[in-house]
Image 1 (tube, rainbow, N blue to C red):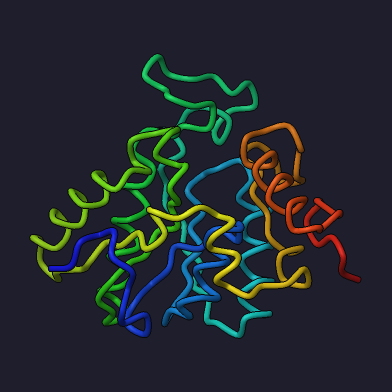
Image 2 (cartoon, helix red, strand yellow; image 1 turned 90 degrees about the vertical axis):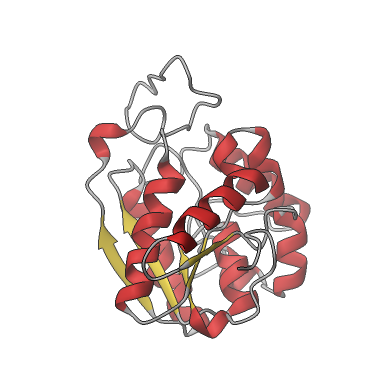
Length: 219
């Protein structure tokens, strides 16, 4: 059983959880998995993410599946409520309790359905500074649990020791693709006032891309 932090070798046997954000878009370009999977789990920016996922998948010529996961009642923070109300245990404003476990489990189920052997998540190194389900140890444990169960699907986070900037450097993606990404935590139009938007603005600005709204630089 490979460690969850190892880079995936057999990308053609994988499902990539795909939000249309910078990290998952870079992973899609690098690994070109068998299937991209967008999940509407009740997050407030679901429509924005769906539009981005569809457009980026089209540009990269990769197949996209879309599923719904009814976990809205279990959420909290910016992704779930307009007020951004957080639980006392929340380590960051966008924290949704056990979100990556929910999503990884759904992705693994889709992998089994499609006769694939692994599910990829797009966590990057700085995510572990914000919440435990963005750390290498979390993915090591989750991978061991999922692999133990029927189907033995691997749960992999191939970018867990890399930054978004490093991923983009490896991806070769240009502005004509990056402009279609979206990373907002609170709205179906990029709000510019949440951690996701701040990260996207910072990373794109460092690459000399001046337009920050979804679809910037196009049409």
